Length: 133
Image (cartoon, rainbow, N blue to C red; front, side):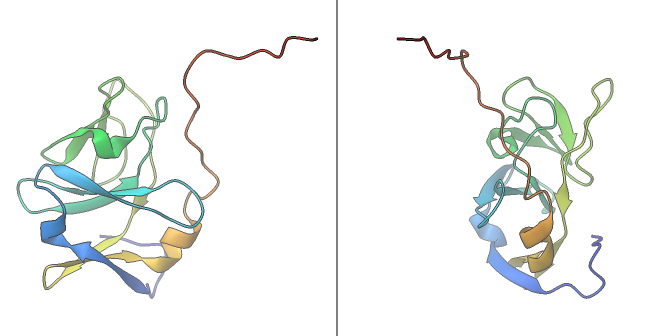
């Protein structure tokens, strides 16, 4: 667990048991996309922006295996420890510092307020054109 903030202010998010094993839980933020908190079968807890670096798929809906999650849209494998896409794919999604203490999960409040707050999810579907009247 590393953080860019030398003295993080930890914000209580949930209990570890609130995150399904091999699953995730989404945490809404006032600005920016949700953060996805993942739990693997070894008891590890990880947090990434809920956005695949490929086409913006919701990683929280992916399948967790080991220390990776498979994006539900195109099956890209994203590392839970660092947010890096596995080769041959390239890209990275922002990660968030996590602290687990006495069964509770905490995220760094400063990171929640500042990291990747400008990113959006791509809009899928057919392009729309305005037809002149």
